[in-house]
Length: 289
Image (cartoon, rainbow, N blue to C red):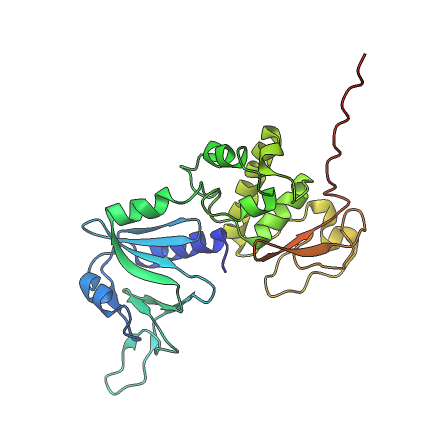
């Protein structure tokens, strides 16, 4: 499932290509035909993201709410010359099962396989926002809201970071990497995490995810651990980017050399270094006088 930086990139891309102008909407697949017909020909006012949810705004406080889920994907294109008797230019041909096609003056986007694609009202949109935690990429995010939920929970911090009600937009990659960079045991109960540790982790996520938006990849290693600095080959993975522990099971930690471990936690794979993220020792009780 795409992480939050990808959804923010999609919001930026839709705003750049279509905002402020009328757009033609259709549903070649047919499953969004009513919604497309309702908004077809109207101006795309803007686009925003909250966690893994995308909202495309139209006049009259109407939005297309999209959640990509596991299989959803947007494909963008510019108009190309069309080989027909009339000539001219237009969007590319429909390829595959397209739930929603957006066509602007000189560009188009196709949405395939989303978990959610529906028209929502202001009240329905507000309901979605209300059930989500703060998003490190939103300027209105309040990290204290996430901290309030973390500090009263006995669940492992690794599980809490993936709970979109606690923190919106963080997925399995950012979860593993933020915990490693903080040197935090992923099994530590949320209520035992120190406030200073949380504040530093939030600031780190804000910076890392903003870089993800800018570069369209997840890079989390510090300058001294890059391939160039360490004289090692670059990472090869479908997800791209240089990371410390994510999908590096059995490989040596880039910092200490310990083998990176993996385990299942709340239905997802958890990656961590047992040395760099060592469990905190229990404090000894003071001896009686």
